Image (cartoon, rainbow, N blue to C red; front, top):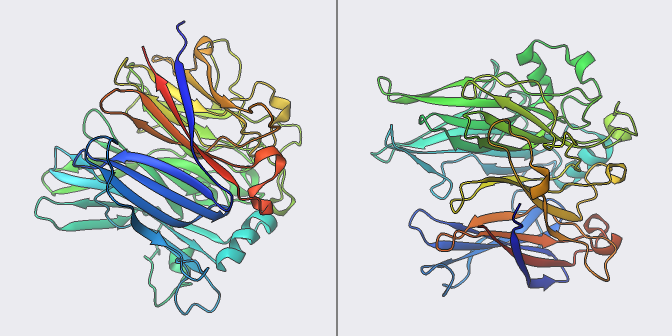
Length: 439
């Protein structure tokens, strides 16, 4: 099997922040680069973008997208006595929208994120197992006449949308808890919105007793539900149906499932791969074995996303399990050779995996187009610990297929060098770029 050629270079370093550079093409075909700055774990304090009309040869000036002022989070709800924060990404977005030919509409999905007690609530969630994170998911579309329709995905009665005048309304906070991770368009024109749904709600939808299936912390973690949208021309609207929840017990994964990967194989099968976790956390009352392995999970649908199989450990064609920490990954289909690839953290020494770590080696590997397993002899290292280092995190990366060369561009921010962790106040980062050349 021919090996991929990979070149790499460091773009910049920052001693005081995690600094990442992401690239994408806008609806006009121009290249957009976004510089993201993080000075606290899991929170971007600033974002700046610039546009290139000639695919990166020349650039316009940097434009501020958002920036915290005076050291205060921009997401803090004005006048809220508890310091609650609300990050609203639910509205229709021109930059995220896809064109839907059957309806003539532009469509997109998004989420809102409410944190009870704000930044303090963030740490209460991770350290004490407090139920402070509240996600809600939305679908919106823009008609040809310019009118926009937005709706929350609803799974139960009695829910209400966010009202800034009644910030801790239980009908909003406690109902319809789900995050819209991403939307896809199927070959027949139907839409699939992948929803990370609160585990308590997943169990109710599946007719399963949450107190036996996931008693540890069902309000903190999630299963996955696929919302399939079909255009009804008679009603001039989209109609959604939900798949069965895909979920595992807290004896199998501490945090259920999140951060999916989605692909339609040449066989027509829809393949879903998920991040699980083997973390043992006292505050979450975890039941998982302290010696449980950690790997990527998979499920698939052979009926167009209407129903999905029970989840199983993902594997190679050699029947070896794809051992991996709780970390993000992506699928990528090359326009140059038509092949489907997985990019993520595969760990060949599974006894080293503990929750989110290690993330110190990043791979790319080809996916089988009939069943959806990985082809082991195509496994290729993109980057790993370099000379003079003892550890590094290689995660949370951005992908772009260059429209001229059809090469894959991977951009990520390296953090947590040599055991000096971001969560401990070590903010040094390096922004790197990798070019993957296909046959």
